Length: 337
Image (cartoon, rainbow, N blue to C red; front, side):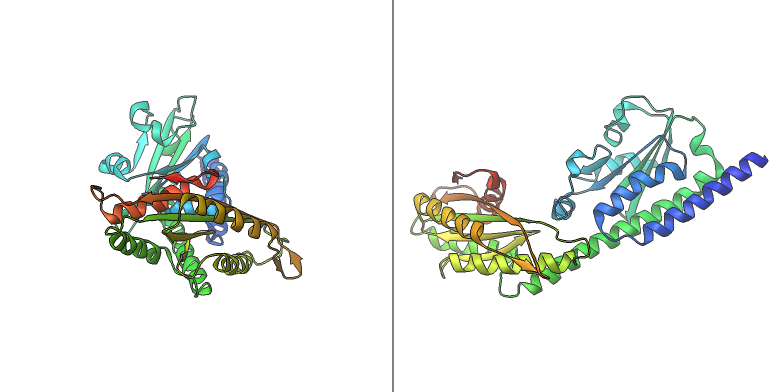
């Protein structure tokens, strides 16, 4: 009995320290890494994984904005929809035996069958945002009174932390868009493309889309990362606008990306323009707080020739064209859709 009391007391101290450190974090990659690493010793677990719902790809965009290699994180699972969680939590929190056909999606990195697992729902305002998934080789681990009583508090805290982090990313994007006040946003880009497709339907014009992805060094350790990003993107956007025609539609796309729509331009002309812009970007110099900032840019493009008998709506075509240009960032050739 004394050993159990002392063990629970030590676990409580670790749990309190974990909570305090977690509350200091705002950046999504830092939160994910901290949970996956630091929660294991708190409850003396063998493994842990984290699943987050990413239906619209927003979390992926956030993580890519920090150059976070989420694809190499085996214990981070990004779910395309919430149906898996809805099915899993129909009876509430799960604590018990591991069943491969039901639980493999939550533990894709496991080679050894766990003695016991806990799958805990993360939700805010009645909506699932993900799950915390715990592994132990001790069959009685999650029947420890302290651990079981701490679970509701833990998952409520994690859900709140993630929601705050998502809100932080949204506010950061809004601030960046305000900083780039002279640059249109993605909604405007899609709206203008639909308008041009509607107008071009009568003359069967070609529409091309360019997407520019900017990558830059973080600078010194004491550099304000957010201000640096704003400075770099503002500088690059100014250069890109100079390279485009007045009639071209230039917009901020997302993350560290810009996009441009070119109307009535041949594939050959788009290739020439793309090369000229790439040369201008390669020659562009950026400095911030007295230091030179190394940066690079890649250009992806796609084109669409309007067809009178096309069954797709212009809204569908506009999204497809922009997405294809985005996907072709690694491709130096024009892709036609």
